[in-house]
Amino acid sequence: DVGWARDTRDSIIYPTNGSLQRAFAEVGLPGGTIHYYKLSYQHQWLRPVIQDFTLMLNGEAGYANGYGGKPLPFFKGFFAGGNTSVRGFKASSLGPKDAIDGNALGGNRRLVGNAEVLFPFPGMKKDKSLRMSLFVDAGSVFGEGDAEGKYSRISFTDMRYSTGLAVSWQSPMGPMKFSIAAPLNSKATDKMERFQFVLGSSF
Image 1 (cartoon, rainbow, N blue to C red):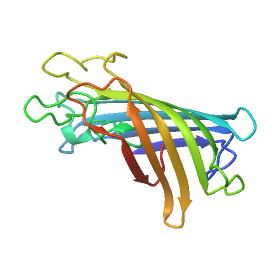
Image 2 (cartoon, one colour; image 1 turned 30 degrees about the horizontal axis):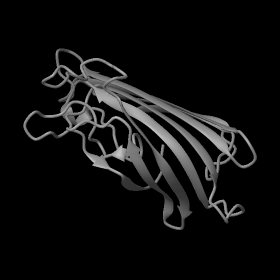
Image 3 (tube, rainbow, N blue to C red; image 1 turned 120 degrees about the vertical axis):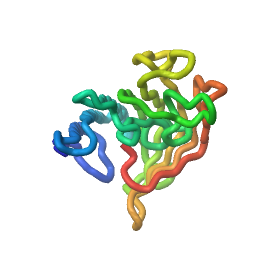
Image 4 (cartoon, one colour; image 1 turned 90 degrees about the vertical axis):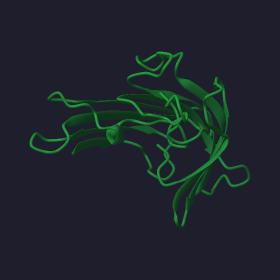
């Protein structure tokens, strides 16, 4: 596994300016039992807009495949949905689904985008441990496709979109994020989860 990161944000806890770039490569080496490669890249950008409001844009892309005539192991595929990608949809539920039980199959391509306006928690402007935001999320994973041929190629039509409100708290136990989201283009086969919580880094 090989990783690279460049972080110019003015703060890890309460960033208002700067950017974060991360790249990661994972390879199953020849001679091993699985032959695959997995690449991912993230770019996060923050700028202050007016007074205490900050605009955050986040983009993530990933690609994976097998090599040497071997398929990509299913447990090495990408997943999307949930509080760290597209809020309002159940974690790891987006993309191609099994025709029998409707569970997500994952994919070898992942695309996620987030736009968020961050601002101080009302009445606690000086408290840097609490922060609120309004957001719009978009994303999905793509692979061999489902029975209807969807998700076999990257398509904005097959992506899912949501919007909502989030609260970030730098608690003594670590960073926490709560969100209430409304899916904007959900389908009958999607699994929604309007209230979500995550302990740890959000993006």
